[in-house]
Length: 374
Image 1 (cartoon, helix red, strand yellow):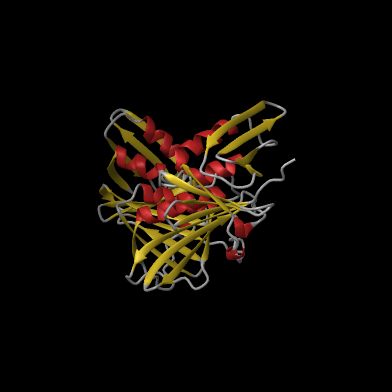
Image 2 (tube, one colour; image 1 turned 45 degrees about the vertical axis):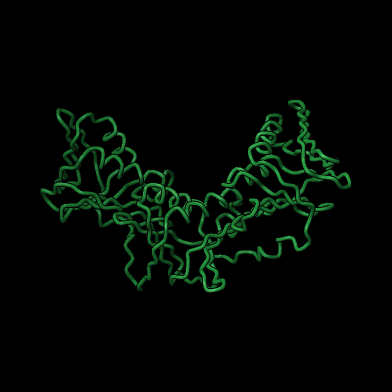
């Protein structure tokens, strides 16, 4: 195999694979990427068996062929090259030579035949076109609430479903860690779109790769789902993500049916106040006590290891005094992702959950369980 390629193109292609390739694995070839040359393009493939990435890049192909090489080492080599163009060549012994100007790198590769298959063509997939920023927005508004406990497989990802509502199709993502739940919707209009009967669970790593792909993608992407796999495509890249094989809990049961006390805030004012409370918080002491009295809300945070913080905010509240505690980080996470300037904070009575929404919008909510106030 022999080809010439622009250094910047090659570097970008390899860099996209670094978050996918396995760092610790019993299969050394999963540290590698597959490079295949032909038809005036090089194809770069990476997989950890759960996620697969296939991307095409323009190149001058001198001889067709394929090989697998260490993704990390090849990236470091190309990163340190100063020239604009890179010459890549292999021999029959799977030795790779990378040349640019007077720089020559040599490394060992492994045969492409040993690389796990990523291009699975069994069964047809129907792809549906969608604006990438819609999916990116759903991920942004929910991913923070995923569980970090890998033992709870069904919660260590986001639940993705489609909803038909009055002739319009909606996408919905939901994430929860048992202490909070984030839910976001996006309208995709009346056009025919992906139908998910039971919904799917996209794992944490797969979700990160989808978001990374969409950030670098053109405006439109293509989405398809079949047999436990979600596929997201752009013109030059295909991402294949294995879904979590588990039942997602009935999240609708968590949504409060009784309305609590609703207080409206300027988003930035409340967010900055909460961040000031978080200055004294730690993993052991992360609570903020919120006291609502006539015309004001008082925020208090106490940490025996650090100190105390207290702040008062004027609010349009004229009812009985209420005191409730929440994890300050959970409140910050929930408010940061809201795009509007005003938020509605619905505070439940007793130990009932609080709900954060954007004012005059129904595309997002975050439900947060309260803490016991000592």
